[in-house]
Structures are given as structure tokens and as C-alpha cells.
Image (cartoon, rainbow, N blue to C red; front, side, top):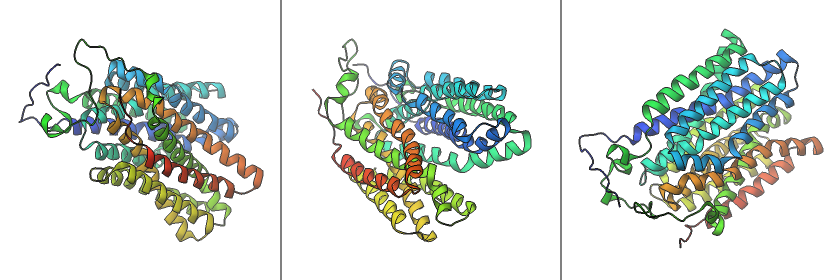
Length: 420
């Protein structure tokens, strides 16, 4: 087995720089791909006369292109390491975003957003969390919490930025500026300058600690010259990935349902549009806190128990939403929802990092991630269909609450799989 190069004691641990690189990437990707789209949606519909439903479909198509081929993205990251897919994928996304400047037909918008979604799949969540997983073991939950918090910050920063850009430069030029941010800040600074694949590449070890001071909970890569006979088909031979995918889907469904329909619901019960928007901003603030809190607590406490508590708090929040119209309690719900969504998003890669060796992480994440993506994509459609049929969101929120209860059961029972 190849030996780890000796660590230079005078050399600072580089993992925090690699983490900063992927935090920058996810902050930009989430901010531009999703959050800026919500700002530009009404501007595009007014300019072309297209319906909001038709234009919104471009984002849904892009999200599906991002998530459905995740097994392929996971295999790519496993084959080439995360850094090269990060660079290539974000370049593709940047070019696609720039191309929206030239859009004249709705099919062109769909095509470019699908291409952007493919680029985001190649150089997004799987590649980024693989970098974190490679560089951290003991402090992995905290590092993942910081990474997820960066995605939450995009919801606080990019909508006002995109609004200001549209007012100053027009919506078409805004797409070019956003594309420039992807390439210059995301690709050049985040991926090229900061990201490195493994600590071993730089003569370091995970967490920057002596190799004897930590132990990966599962076997690492086979010795040089030996074949690793493990296959993707083996992933689902144990119940563990089904349970992890199940709780990720339950959380994603609730998150998608609430994020899409909360503003409309709060207005329906008698509050102003500004008040409704404020409840969502409040949720985004607690989203940032939730990932950091879960990451810090998971350094000391069992992540199965923490995830179960997260779902219990999510369920309490949804019960509050179903039983009161008090604005104060709606803000309490928003705080619970933002914090638990972020914590449970952090939980999924934390479970996988704890249960599978580093050289298999990207593959496993690649086959589990579609559970989350599909649930998130379907939730908004199902919520809207229920409202159209019943003139109320009550049944939609009851379904979300039921899934939170189911997610709690899944998370509690998602134990480490047994290996042959």
C-alpha cells in the first residue's frame, strides 16, 4: 500500500482553502442558477409575453438535468477526481448562462437552462462535497455544515444583487454579468486556485492531523495492484442507502413545497406581499444557521439522533403552520423550517461520509442524490395541483408533515451498512 507523504509541520492545513473554494462555487451556483432566476422570471415574462408557468418550466428542466444523471456525475468524479469536473462543469454553466443574452424563443431558454443544469451536475454538489469529504474526517460534519451554509447565503445575497443589476444594466446584460461571475470567481478563483482533490496530493492528511490520530470508519481504497471489486449495484443491497435517500427525499419535498408556495399562502391568509416575502427571508437566515448548528453538534453527538430531532422540529413547525394564522407563529414556523431544512441537507452527505470510504463516496452520492432532486422538483407541482383542486394548501401541508414523520423514522434507522 502506498505510504502517505510526510506532512510538513510548518505548512498550514490546506483543507480550509479547499473548503473555501467549494463554498464559493456553491454560493455562486445556487445564487445564479436558482435565486437569480426568481428575480428575472417576471422581467422575462413581461418582455416576451410568455406565461410564468412556461418560463418556470425552464428552471424545472434545468434542475432535473442537474439531478437525474447523478450516477453518471458520481462516476465521473470517481474517475477523474473532483477538481477537473468542477472546472469543466462550471465553465459549461457559465457559457450557457451567457447564452441567455441571445434568447429569442422559449425553446432556446429551455435548452440553455438544461445545458446549465448539466454543467451544474458535473461541477456542482457531488464534486463539491467530495472535496469536503476527502479533506475532512473528524471535522467533516462541521465542514459540510459550512458548505451548506454557503448555499443558504446565496439566497440572501443574489436576489438583491440581480435586482440591482437589472435596474442598472437591463435583464439581458445581467445574464452576461452573472456568467462572468461564474467564470471569474467560480471557475478561476474557486476551482483553479483554491480546490485540490486530496490532502495526500499535498503531503497532508485529512483534518491536517497525524494519520494515527483519526480512523476512517470504513476501509479505504485497496492496495496498489489489487482490484476493487465493489460495484454500484452493491449500493442498494443494504437498506441503508434507501433509508438515507428516503429521508433526503422527505426533507426535499417539504422544502420545495414551502419555498414555492409560502409567499402565496401567507398572502392568502390576509398578509401583504412584503410581509410574505419577509417570512421567506427570515427562513433563509435560519437556513444558514441550521447547517452550521448540525455540523457543530455532529462533532459530539450521533448524527442519526440529530437528524431525527431535526425532522421532529420540522414536524412541529408544520403543525404550527396548519393550526394558526398568527404572524408571530408563522415566523416561528419559518425559523424551524429554515433551520431543519439546512440541517437535514447537511445530514445526507454526513451519513454517506461516515458510512462509505472516501474512494466510494461520489458513486454512492450519485445514486442517492436523485431521490432528493426528484422529490424537490415534484413538490412544487403537487402543491400547486392540490391548491388548484381544493382552493387550499391544507392537504399539501398535511402531506409534507406526514413525510416529515416518515423521514424521522428513516433517519433514525439509517445505520452503517455491513460490508462483505
